Length: 165
Length: 168
Image 1 (cartoon, each protein chain N blue to C red):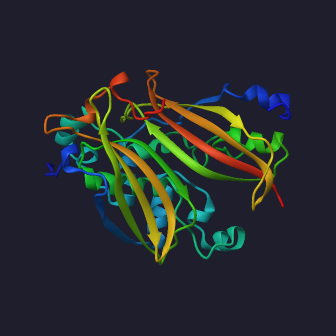
Image 2 (image 1 turned 60 degrees about the horizontal axis):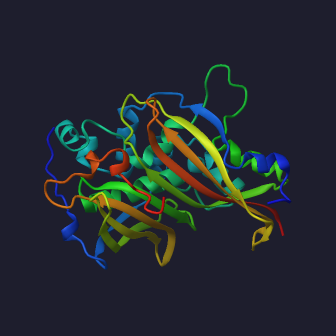
Image 3 (image 1 turned 120 degrees about the horizontal axis):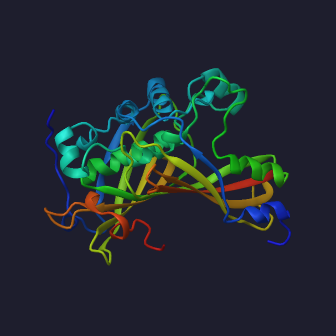
């Protein structure tokens, strides 16, 4: 198998740029596939009766690591495969259920190059269902500074995903 | 911090609950994860792309918690295995029956690769003074979960902020 892909570099990106929206119709299979793929066996992610009776929710709901995997996919769809996630911070304020259409949104907050020459993009990313924001996310992702650069080749002190550390 | 039980105060910045994952990182779960979110990134599917870009196949970074989640069942286990034991111990020692997680931050270092076995360590960083929120009265705590591979390389640090409380 050989796949073609597009790759964004740091010079392609400016603060204020918006990422294209991604819309996903959620079904029970969506929720269960994610729960099993993340080895989360807790019943509120596969047993509707349990979710309703014990959690008081209207249905089973997407678990946190599945949510994180969606954010990662959304971000690297935009960067291309040389985009390397450095840090992700998220806050879930509401759950996502079968029947919902979840829409991912993103915006470039800042770009820059660190002391080691690594190119970074700071993103605000958020997930909405209808008018409601269910998860907010801040992500820091490394992008190639030019066509020959590749953040995945960085090791040790050349890789500094937490700038305040 | 002087009003904290001495035992809990002694946990701060101590590496606790060091545990190895129960299985090696493997591509089957990587495919399951990518399929579950329709992630077509070629570094997970295409050997040529993986070799060129990431020096071979890696796991998606956000899968990091997958590699140390316990099996649903295994021979000889008599109790349910609990992830984030530190969180549950804090609830018990501080007498706070309810708890929620408010923030979750993951910082990624060395990529995780098929064949790796990960070790996880939980480290309490801080416990707040008593606070009252709309949920009730309790304390905030921050703890890190560090994950390293079999070569001792740091792969990720996951930081959680929890709030343990008694309903108001």
